[in-house]
Image (cartoon, rainbow, N blue to C red):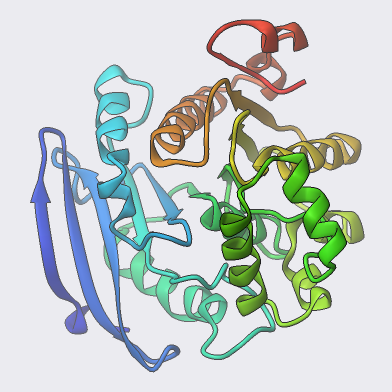
Amino acid sequence: MEMNQLEVVEHQVYEDLEYIRFCAQSTVLGRRTTFGLCRSRRHPLTPAAIHYFFHGANGDDRQFIVGEFHTAVGSLMRSGSLPEGALFVLPHIETSFLARSCQEPSFHRYFHEEFLPMVESQFLKSPVPRYVSGISMGAFASLNLFFEEKSTFQGVLALSPALLPFDFFDEDKASAFQRKYEIPKPLMNLVLGLFKSVFPTYENYLVNDPIAQLKSRVPTGTDGRFVHLAAGDQDELGAMEGVTQLQAILKALGIPLSHWVEIGGKHDLQTFQKLLTRGLVELHSFQLGHQVSDLTTPTEGLQEKGRAFLP
């Protein structure tokens, strides 16, 4: 994937930002694919940081625009809660979860071997802090990238991660999870079908599952890096279950993190935008030197109206 192969297929200009969508031929994938960039109009050539943002399973690289995330980013830049030079890179990963050891072509290999080197050679003049974030399926992918053995991401924002912390090939366990979170059966069947289409066996899922990976291997190099977990307390897919388990594991491992629950939040774009806004604010505070412990509030905050941190 070379710069001279990139074709601009969309260009939108907003008050503070510009969005550019590219199409290019991927050697790894063996086909043409798309990705987007969202950046400040005042600092287009000198990014202060680079954020890789992964869409959900029902979206694509335009979900950042469709979901009005760019509006939230622009507002944060104007208020000084986010560096003006932040560059958001929006890959299209289809419904791959960026899974390892699954079907070919591998989006995981595409991202590491082709996409990331191309983006950073073409759009960065010098190294800058690198962060990864995502919603739903994209949050699953973000966690895996961040906790990989040789990861060079300085932070992760996992927003309503699509995690199924049970053997979803076991009908009894799937039914129990569905009843616990009152998930409509058609929606549950859709979710199970998606996971089974990507992960042919439960063993293969565990190779990719962030919860299983953290249980089996203590990640290295987490000092000075930022972890943020968030979900809505009324998430229709039971995302709170995975977030709670991850939070407990990270706490036991002594890995600092901030964590947030959106009161009344669901598994929808409106909630995702609120979670991203909060996560970026916490990330900026961390960059300014605040410790993660400074970003938390008492457990009883859950009883307050509005947003609060998980216990």
